[in-house]
Length: 419
Image 1 (cartoon, rainbow, N blue to C red):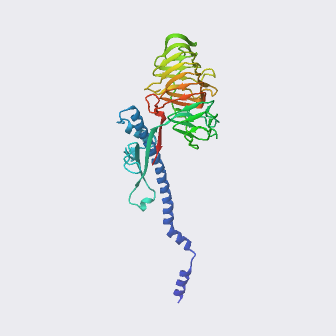
Image 2 (image 1 turned 60 degrees about the vertical axis):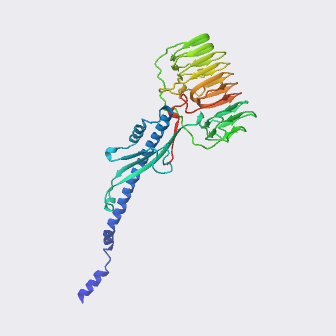
Image 3 (image 1 turned 180 degrees about the horizontal axis):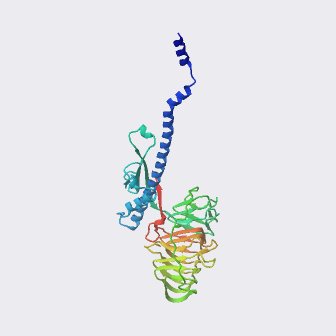
C-alpha cells in the first residue's frame, strides 16, 4: 500500500518537466538555428554568384557588339572578356566554381538569339547543420542573360538640373536621324522656343520634362539618368610646350602638326591641313574664321583644364571645315576632347554660316556648345556630348550613323540584362 502511494506521488510530480521538455526540444531548436545559418550562407553565395554572372554576361555582350563593328564576326576576345570579368568579380575555379557560357542562350526567352549571351555560375556551398537532413553539400547557381548595342542617341546634354540643357530657339530647325538625350531633371530640360523652332529626332529622351510645340516625336520623360559615357577615358599627357606662342594663319596653303600648343591656333584665311595625330591645346583655343578652309584626317584635338573662357573652339564666318577623327587606337572616334575638370564658363561656338563636316565625337562634358547663325553640320558621323547644347538660327545637323568607323567608340556600347 505504501509503495502504491509513493508511485502515485512520483507520477503526479511536475517539478522537473521544464528540463525534460527542454531536453526533448533542444535538438529541434538547434536544428532551426542551424538551418537559419545555412540559409544565410546560401543567400550570400547566391548574391555573389549573381554578381559574377551579371558581369560576365555584360562583358560578353559588349564583345559581340565591338566585334560586329570592328571585326569579322568571329569575336576572338569573347571568352577572354567573359572570364576576365567573372574572375574580377569573384569567380574562382580553384574553389570549385563552375561557369557555363552559352552564346546564343540555350534557355529562356532569348534562346537562339545571337545578340544575347547566357551565363550560368555555380558555387559549392557547405553546411553547418543541413547535412543532418541532406546526404551531401550542394551548389548554388545564378543565371544572367545580357544583350548589347551601340547607343542610338547622338546628342547627350549632361547637365543634371539645368533648364534648357538642350535648347532650340530663334527659328532653328534642328533635325537628327538619331536620338537625343537630356540628363536634366528640370521640368523644361528641353526647351524649343518660338513659332518656327523645331527639334526632330528618331527619339527624344529626357530625365525631366520638355516644353515646346514642335518636338518630334513626342518626348519620353522620366528616363533614368546617365553617367558621362567617356568619364573613364585616359586623357593625353601634357609634358611641355611644343609651341609657346599663338599659331596664326591668314593665307596660303599651310600644314600644321601634332604637338602641345600653349598659344591659340588662330586660322583666319588660307587653306590649312592638319597632319594626323593628337593636338593638345594647353590653356589655348582653336579659332577658324572668315573664309578659311581647314582639312584634317585622323585628328584628335584635346583641350586641357587650364583654359579660361577665351580658350574655346570657335568656327565661324563662312569657314569650311572638314575634320575626321581617328579610325583606330585609344582615341578612335574622338575628334574633340575637353578635360572634364575644365571651367563650365567655357562656351564652344559653331556659328556664322560655316559649313562643317565633323566626323567623330565632340566631347565637352562640362561646357556649353552653341550652333547658331546658319551653321550646318552635314557629317554622317557626328556624336555630341556636352553639358548644355544651344541651337539658334537656322542650324542643321544631318545624317548620323552610330556604328560608323569614326563615330563608334567602345565606351558608347550600351548593355542590358534581360533575364
